[in-house]
Length: 220
Image (cartoon, rainbow, N blue to C red; front, top):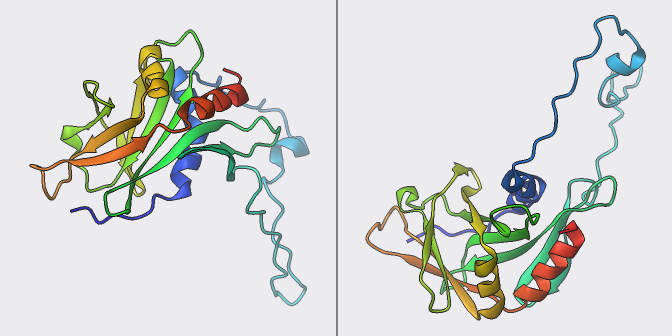
């Protein structure tokens, strides 16, 4: 039904950079406009050095940023079926999330989920970013259940070329359910077969240790 494909690491990087801040609903203050009378080199300097060139007009090239530099995603640890994925920052305070790639019964990569703890003053104890294929029926949303518990339905927020994204909040009781459970089920509906459902299994093996490690790293 689905034209399944691997979900790109770009999605995880994006979620790590903006996910926690979005759920906590924090925003940085607007930067003050520079004084009109300021004409120093600091305000007029270019963001990056231009590409060097020889006298005959030939390009001499420029340095290429390292693939594992600031902004790159890396796996800090593995807990069962979960990975602690982090984004490298300049100051070393790398934000992390607990990540799992979800596959169908044939072993095809279909979706991914990233979970992270939130500060204690939030209504949700944890947030999650779920990315489903573009061929998903958006009006049906997605649903999730743990073991034999009653499923809860969540809407999609937006779609990009990497897939359709749902931002989900979990109560402390729901997080505790993940810690005690064996397996969760994520259900989505394909556009090409709206009368059918696709159930994706989420292993909860290693969830407790991974979730606690992510929270410790993030300072929650």
